[in-house]
Length: 204
Image (cartoon, rainbow, N blue to C red; front, side, top):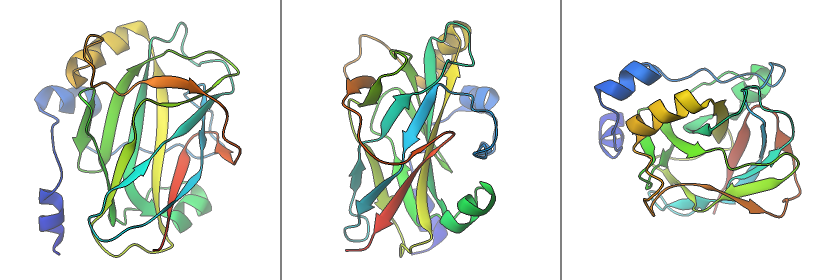
């Protein structure tokens, strides 16, 4: 399948307003040694692959490990990247596209881009607690997946002013029942990344 055909499968929902707010390029991924811009840590997970184009549903896990870098945070910008090279991530934290697995959005407070998807959610979090999401994130393999492929997810705490602005762009409406939201959960044992979490894919 051509890259053009793969790209046609993506929902590119960001309009001009989103481009102005978010920038036209893919965001840079902070390296592990950099100061985090979120109060969250992120669970690394491994999931089983199905067939080509067969959706993989992932339940991200978060832990509130530190004080937010934002005074009185009101929201969180969650980012889920398409697959990237695990070797490059482990070497220096850089994002090198493999584009073999796409992250998809099915929620009204999320937008898809040509590098993955982003969601704006309210900051319903407390220090020392663990959270998941009230719905799953979908990854879809669109080409042969190798051991070097990894999905990446991260977050950025945002202030009340930013949350209000981003909510308008992303379509977050608290009265909507199709929002992606945080829900408290029991902590899942495992390795938690300070600045991002990894989703790796095991072959069928």
